[in-house]
Structure formats: C-alpha cells, structure tokens
Image (cartoon, rainbow, N blue to C red):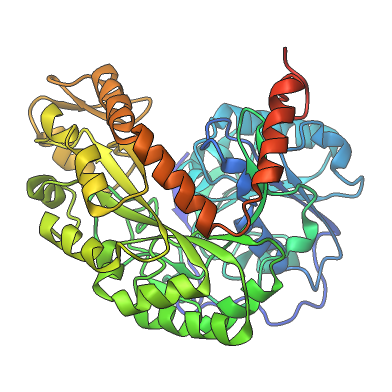
Length: 486
C-alpha cells in the first residue's frame, strides 16, 4: 500500500482543544505490556507515560482503568464491559507478534473496540501495526509525545487532522506529519489514581525488597549528540530538543508523590544546573523529604556547589553516562569530554554523600580487550560505588550505525543490534563484561558500597528487606506473579 501523507490545516503550533463538550468514547482501558526482557528491577517503574496520557482526558472521560501486564496476568477480567477504546504503551522491545496477539484478544473480548498505541516501539513499527489484518490491527498509532493529541482523538473519534498519527483509510496507509516538538508542559500531572499495582523494588525472579518507588519526568530530550544515543531523536531521525518543566511544577508533583524513593526518568536531569539549583531550593524550603535517583552527565561535577545542595535536598543516587575511559573511544562516541575531564569532575564531588553509578559501553570501534578490562580500576579510582556495563548497540537512525557498518571487520547482529568484530565475538564481549563486573566487585568494594547505601538511602529498611529475602528463600522463591516455584 502506498503512503499517503494527509495535509494539515495548521501543523505548526497545533494545540489540543481547551475544553471538550462531547467525546466519541465512553470507557478507556490503558494497557502497559510486559516486554519480558526488562531490567532486573523494571517493576519499580510505573507506566508514567500512560498515566500522563490518562491525565489528559481525566475531565472528559470518567470511566478509565489501567492494566499493567507485568503484574496482572489474568487481565481480561479487568477490562470493563463498556470499554470502547484501548490505549497501549509500547516503550520497549516487545515482539510485534505478541502485540498482535494482545490486540486480537482485546477485539474478541470487546467486539467493536478501537485500539490505539504509542511509544517508541509503536512509532518504529507503525506501518506494520496499522496494516495488519483487522482482527489484530492497531487502529491508530501515535508518534512522538502526546502533548494533548490523544484528547483531541477521544473527542472526535477520528485520526484525520491529528498530527503525528498513522492509520488505514480506504485501504491505504496514511500518516499525518508530526508537528514541531514543543516545550514539555508543566501540566497535567500524571494520573496516579488509576494504579492497582504497588511499585516497589521487585526483581524479575520475585524478590521484593519492600522499598516503594515512583517516577517523575522533569525534562524531555537532550542537547548533547552522543553518537550511540537514540533517545534524543525520534524514529524518523528528527532531533528531540531539550526542554524543561518549571522547578515549581516539579516540586508540586514531588509533594504529591507518596513513595519515599523517586526516580527521575529524564535523560539528563542536571543539564541546566541553574534549574536544578532552584529545584533544590524549593525542596528544602518546602520540606519535601524524599530520596531521589537521577541520570546525568559529568558536567554536574563542574558545579560542585550545586551537587552539594542536591545532596542536602535528597538526591542520593546519581548515575553518570561515562561510557568509555580512553580519549579515542570517547571521541568515537562523541561524548564531548575527555578522560581528564572525568577525573576532574569526580575530584570535585567524590566526598559528597551520594551513591555514584557509572554507565560503561564495551565493543566500541578501535577498543581492545585490554582497554576494556581497565574499566574496574578506573571506576574505583574516580570513586564510583557501582557500575553498569553494556554492549554497544545500534538500534536505529543514530549516526553510529553508518560508522560501524563502514568500518572493516565490524558487524551489527541483526537480532540484538549489538556490535561485534572479527577480533571479538558477541560471546567474547559477554565474557569481558562478566570479567569487568567481577574485577570491580571485590569484597572490599561490596562492603564499601553496602555501607554507603545503608547510610544514605532513607527508604531502605534492612529489617524489611531481610524479612522479604527470607520469605523469598524459605517459602519457595515466588515468581513475579505470586506463584510458588519449587
């Protein structure tokens, strides 16, 4: 089928209607799938994107429900009988065949239901999703951030004229062009009232540490141009510019969150250190007393006075995107800093009461086995408390893909998108990753990190954690769904 691009009357500066007098739907079911391959603690993250979408129609659709398939396996019984619209979030790499099966079951369960989807995976596969046979077809796919477009669709029931959606019309595949990326809005705040699951540090093997958690998004996009990153571009390669919510709106949301441990899902929380400084002032002035985890770049170390205030305001777990430790590899990844800058930044903040995690990538072009194995010593020397080590991947339109494919002896695995070379296979790179982790986690490092976490993380109740661990072991190690395994 040929692509037909729908012309829009006003694609620039488009905004959803301020008020809705009537809607095309009576009951909406928001569904968050289980991709089956998330991180060990992916059940600590609520479906924040869906909650933001749900908040946008809170005042015009009373009958709404949220189903999180990471927790609710018998989900069909949860779908209200009058549900006429299902909205699915596809953020991670869930196999498309499983999405089709989910849609098929929905359409059998509630004949006549409309199904829409959004998220990075839905955006990447929008043609396949809306072109599938009617029994398993996603009727409309939204690309890019919502920013009020879902509300407009709920009002009209038709995708025509709504920017950034894909659908089938008269047997032909059509896409409406995306509007320019605007600023991330301060409102609405996510609708957390729809939750049925309790989000905590729950490992995929069922171990519950008894620590409640929540998430917040205070900014969108990133102005840096790391060559491996796909989060600062959409699936069409357009840059997602960095925009920020006001510190006041972020403080308002944090004040409403019940959990003591809150993770910022921003790509780079401290990109604007003046803004984070203002946020810390508000948290301290208003007595909002929580523990926060963030991800940022090493530029935080260049403003140590701001980092010190962050520690006082409750920012305790800081993950840095370091990625590499040699200048030639940092240049290959286009990180924008050199090894001596990393060392200088950590010299300034090493003594602060924070737990530091460093992200590293192995398999970079031109990086030898010996250079990769230097990571543990370097990580300890700059004061990292924990590390995460990953394969280099080329997932989409990032410029790194062309570079890797043009380099003799380097390849991209078609299934995992991991980079490997004639010198170092995927299996050998996996062995190197395990060796890096073993070398870093010496007995003294384990004791040091455990003591630091014990001192700094207020939500951690070691009595509760020990009780959960004993129950998990002595009662048969329950799986994530609550069933017992032998």
